[in-house]
Amino acid sequence: MGHCLSGPGAWQADYVNAIVRWREQGIAPERIVGTRPADIGAEKTAVGENASAGATFSRPLCPYPKYAKYRGRGDVRDELNFECREN
Image (tube, rainbow, N blue to C red):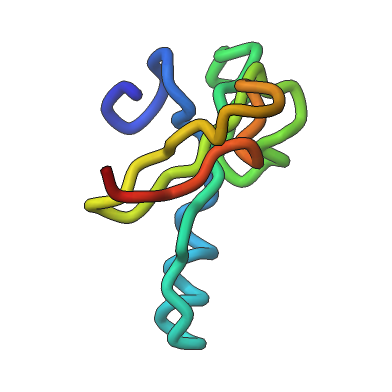
């Protein structure tokens, strides 16, 4: 992922609602879904839009020290086929 915006990774995500929920409800995110938009024109990828619309792939963004690991089955472009784990 590039710094702040764009790059080849799953850089579009809703970090704000996850942080608000953590702060206001005490529920830390186990993962945040990141997507890679198909059209990376800045006017079409504003954070806060439906991230899955037009995405080329999605990945879970995991809290350190965990990372996204493919489960071995299903579409590698779908974050649901990944888990956050250590090692």
